[in-house]
Image (cartoon, rainbow, N blue to C red; front, top):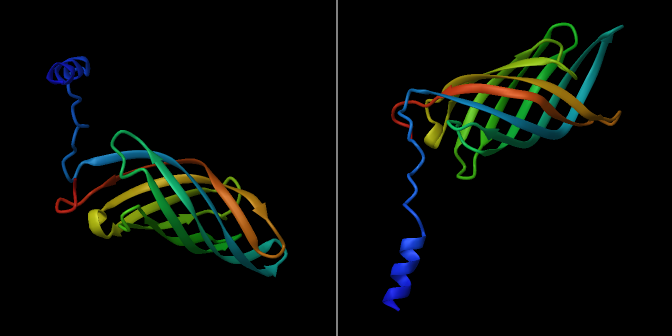
Length: 167
């Protein structure tokens, strides 16, 4: 029995090193994909001018060796104006319930719109996080009843964890 254990240990190879840790306050680069569904209510304000409020939720998956995390539930609520652009507030919630808060702004929000995000804080391990990201949005479904669904065509950014929240 002892011989079998020793042979098993010998064949298992050298122990794997833990992934490199990153000090708090260092930038963490990430890329990802975001898909969401929800509702939109639109007011026609004149020829070629409309304003909408929208509420979306879905999944945000991040990649990158030094990213914030892997998967989040992302919720967004915002206002889009076809002439003035749009603004929104976003909450990403991870598997532990810790959250990242951000603000979005962009030109007339719609398919192909370039949107910029600013990370403004969080809870739990993301307390004090700051950063920025950008994305290009694509509507997949838009019904007259107000149901909408979309996804990002590109999503990338960087974030810095506060010294007390790092790890």
